[in-house]
Image (cartoon, rainbow, N blue to C red; front, side):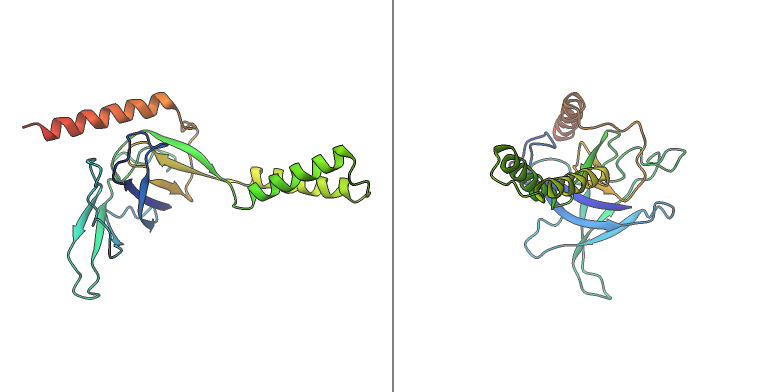
Length: 199
């Protein structure tokens, strides 16, 4: 399983699709081992795991290790109830949010294939190219486009912290992004932050 750890950047909103998220690091783990603590290297100018947008952070500062002398952050992974009976991810192991949504990762070549196919179709329809190779070329582009859509990998994204889970089995009960779920998680997070801030 690969986890791209993210946290809100300064001045970001509560909606995971509209706020800007800062990538903190990438974790490669084996869900069968279920590690509780994972260390991430920190860039020189980083925040050291403190969320600058006022939200709660899943990261903590770590002093330099004696062996390597590197400064970094560490993540505590909460595996309790995170996997279902089929070994599929049920909730975020970083923040504990039980709302995850699925998203497809399209290859970076997809926009270029679409633009070339659209241009070729316009050229063919307007009659600018009467070459017999235009139609087979468009068919090849169509096959490439359909193949990229069919072979696109799916990933899970946490509504609360925005962390991305890939290279893992995805359960059928995880759906695409839903505005009502995002609003529910945002309001619950705001209530939790307000309750922690008041004495």
